[in-house]
Structure formats: C-alpha cells, structure tokens
Length: 118
Image (cartoon, rainbow, N blue to C red; front, side):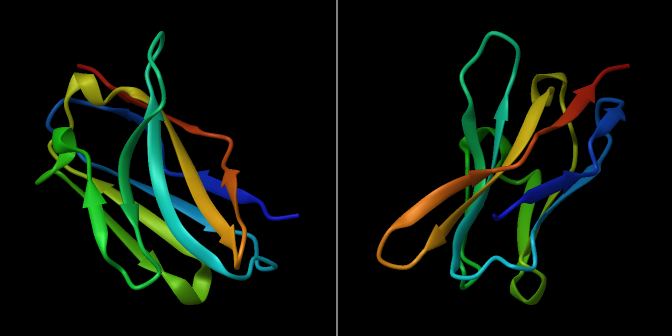
C-alpha cells in the first residue's frame, strides 16, 4: 500500500515563507505526476502546482512567481517552497501522486494545514 506523508505546514505571517514536503513510501514504483492541491473551508480542492517525472512544473495562476515545486525522484519526494504568503493561501494542503503504468491510480496524503495570519 502506497502512503504519502506530508510535513511542513504551520502558522506564518503574511509575507513569510514555508516549505512543504511530501514523501511517497519506499515501496512506491512507477510514480508519475506528483502535485499539491489545497482546500480552504467551504471551497473545493484546487490544484496549486504539479511536476512531471522529468521535473517539468506547472502552477496555478494565483501562485506563479511565489511558489516553487521541486522533486527528488530517488526519494519519491516533492517539495513546495512557498514565499510571499498571503492570507488567501490559508488552506489544508494535500499531496497527490499518480502511480501506475498502463493504469494510473490517484493517491492522497492526509493533508497539512497552512495558516497565514498576523
């Protein structure tokens, strides 16, 4: 059973920075796209950033220029460096991984809370 374990959330002031990590369990193979999503109270879960196995990133418009997603394939780990945080970035952040060959399955982490507040 593949598990995704997130870490790095917390409380930060506006303008501050946080770094999230998400590690897939060692047993995971054929890990394809990995991504971060977020969900604020009363809102749907939205894509924040994604990264291909080759390292190509894409970002939601709302975080371009402020967030950077990166990946360490040897560790099956992705990171999300979040700079110049705003109150509207407050949400639970979820890690997602698509794993498989001919058929890809979605796996989710348990979520980590990010709160941006003074």
